[in-house]
Image (cartoon, rainbow, N blue to C red; front, side):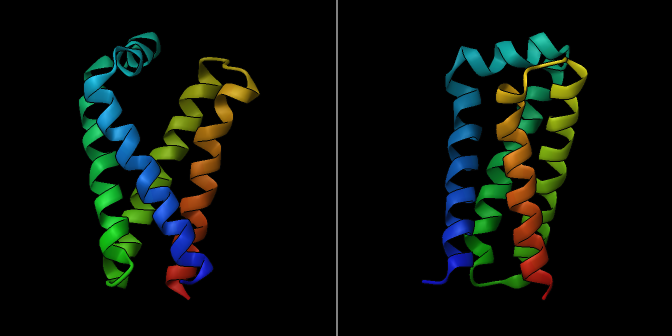
Length: 112
């Protein structure tokens, strides 16, 4: 298994967990309320789940990998922006930024 595939599987599994967590955990819903974005919570969770599935499929289909990694990178860029706007600490903001960088890297490698 290649290093890139390991990163793809890590990201896909993470987004699968985060997407499901929104629907089963009140903590995730409370975060969206805190941001003033509660109406976007379900959409974000569905996009995370779609991105995760796209990454899994993307291991075999480069076009899907490009779409999924690009979409997740954009989602995490927006998430990082929201964290900055809310003046969250660096420690709290770091996961969104990490997943932005990770999916941007996957997108970059998929373009090569």
